Image (cartoon, rainbow, N blue to C red; front, side):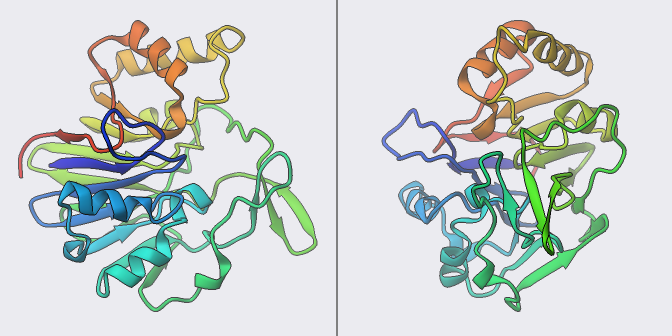
Length: 262
């Protein structure tokens, strides 16, 4: 399985980066697009990388935030056949701690290629789109809210889902932002490799050292390798890398990782 970062927050090459995430994933049976970045930059970078988005046969939106859905309309224009899986609450109005709208473009709701799910969904023997309900520790919302009717409610990230890929004897977990907590994910799922953001960028490596050390300890004691990006934060990644060592990797815009059998 191969994973290419079409766009994320950093770039070590001539490709442009943005605050967002889009991953192109090649498995034995599928060509997958996981998230769509903040704009159409994922498509621009894909062309430069020689990735043909017309060949994508299935796509996933991990959760209902703009930095993962901003290029959704561009993908629908480019690719005319791939269905896009998402949680049925993705189009709820989501706001950050400053009451700024950070949700998906609501004008796209109802597209016939959107497949909305609420529970864990097994797509085939290779792919499962899953939720996380069992929480070892509370969710940290950073002030995020969702509007329901007249009222703002504290965000619980019910709209966040994850992609499990099974190949041979290996399982891979793909996450967009891991809003429900990396420690919770590690305790909930068994996987050989993790790819995605940790959402640690708001942690201060000095004032939140205890939280980061707990995450590092959980990573160290897991049986998986971790390829992170996007919302983890560069300083936070370096902290974890120093603590964990060879199990921790960064996946920047334009880079491809080969996780084995196809």
